[in-house]
Image (tube, rainbow, N blue to C red; front, side, top):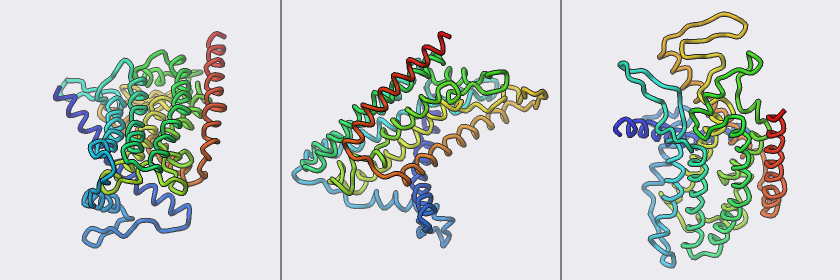
Amino acid sequence: MIEALIKFLCAIVWFLLLSLYLTWAERKESAVMQDRVGANRANFFGFRILGLFQPLADAIKMMTKEDFTPAFSKRFLHNLAPFLSFFFVAVTISTIPFGSHLMIGGKEFRLQVIDLNVGILFVLALLALSIYGVILSGWVSNNRWTLLGGLRGSAQLISYEVALGLSLIGIIMVFPSLKFSEIVGFQSELLFGWLPKWGVFLQPLGLIIFLMAAMAESERVPFDLPEGESEIVGFFTEYGGLKYGLYMFTDFMKVLIIACLLTTLFFGGYHVPWLYADGFHFPWGGDWLLPHGIVVLFQVIMFNLKVFFFCWLQILIRWTYPRFRYDQLMDFGWKFLIPLSLFNIAATAVLMSL
């Protein structure tokens, strides 16, 4: 029990801290794309360090601003809604494996908080439940614009959540398990004696479908219809201070958990090509034996590098493409992603039978 608690605290600190600094990464990446400097005003004893103190300043500002609740809202539910979205997304990190295992004093510690037999279903269910915070905020605020944002969020959920689940059927077919640890274990094998057996090579179409549907899950441009600042102002119109900050922070947490899922399901997770428990064994011949601690360090670093890359990619897409119209998003989900997902399942079944 204590071991699981310690691992959860380490995982949640990593998750929250990295999500916090994704706000800095997005502001800097968008600034580079638009030939600007970006956030750089916050300083600590005169040191700015590329604006790295800006996320901390933003967090302090959010927590110290006035907590205003409209008199015409349903007060208890209005306060509860942002915490619902935050909680359901934050808990998902407990199933993600950061490495294989670490030996300390002859005892083995898995670098994963909990290894559920239905890990994929658990994460998908929690991500789907987070939409209740959006729907609830739209309803309890007693504002026509927030209600419209909540309705858009529920409609968007139906249109992309089906495709999101179907896109993973192919992965489950080629890696017959719902446990993240076993899926990563299958990807440590080699194809043709040299190519890592990663999901991206076995399910390239599934990867594309999952990426598009998962980005709709994060409710960010080009799929930010529930917010739609230039149209309806969004489901969080009546929120400010910490509660508004939680909604914004939850979006960045979704970006991070999507990057973790892409890494774990399609890019080998913590797996480093040709790295085994005792070191590197290259397919062209030659070995490079390493201590156990160095092997684990390689795994953790590789996992983080892959996650950073997919966070960068999602931010790049967010600042490159314009928003879908509402009808375009519905058509995209029902008429494109879902049929493509069904085709991917059928094609995978045919190829596996052959």
